[in-house]
Length: 132
Image 1: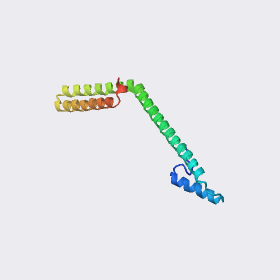
Image 2: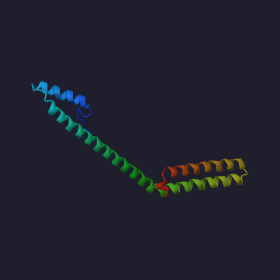
Image 3: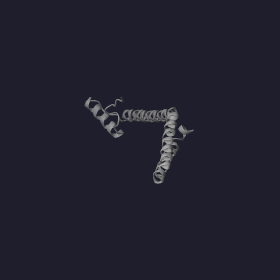
Image 4: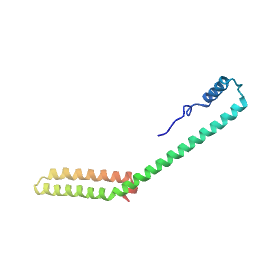
């Protein structure tokens, strides 16, 4: 879990005002030159943190994509076997419909099988590395 500091998302103006108020509350005079130096350091630290977060998020995203591709690759034999099983079932049912002279039923099943094959082709096109 990420912990957030109370002032992590404040603007430079908010930070400057907070620091000035803290100095005045402590009974110290506000040194504008020191305040500018502190602000520059704080801004640089925030930019570095933001850049680090962006790199970390990009690396995590790349790792997630890699792992998803690996899972698809490992699942591919089972997916192909299931597709063959479904196609075979359609082919058997189409053959039975033709034997029963139910040509309309056979045609409807052929259309359903074609739609299924198009769906599979679209899934493969969406993830080309898995189908290679």
